[in-house]
Length: 212
Image (cartoon, rainbow, N blue to C red; front, side, top):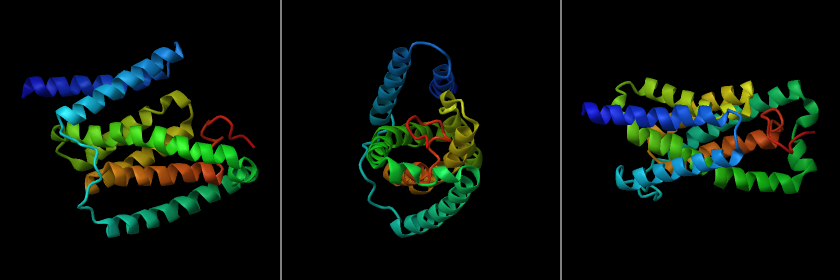
């Protein structure tokens, strides 16, 4: 048990601290891509073989409570972010979907399938299934998850990104522990993230091509 705990802690440090921090350092981009790909493949293999995760849509989910909570939270996000953009940069409000619809559609597709899903596999499915035994306190578990999820965005070098991803990590962590569904948490993540691009926060979050 002690050896297993040491292995899990070492694995946690490499995947969720050392790797994300290294991505913020100035070295060859293709080496960084290679590191991320190797890490992701390792995670998929571990989930399949060690954690017995089959990546199928979970059947027994209380979808009624899920959608009710999602709608309420989304409305809060919509109101808060719309007000924020209005006061910070009114010209940016809905600029991309109105002025650059082609780019907007491409971003929604790429973000949803090439960013959200891998992130949820790594930071929710793998993280919570792999390390749950190390944390007796669920609130602390979710808090640590939010910290490392924010750390994963350190390479953006943007304070607002770190704040929003920490908040998102708290929300998504709670969702995953409640429903134990990668699909459910990915839908939530994609909805909130794509809304940020829609409302006009893309350039504030340092995403290229989103400037007004």
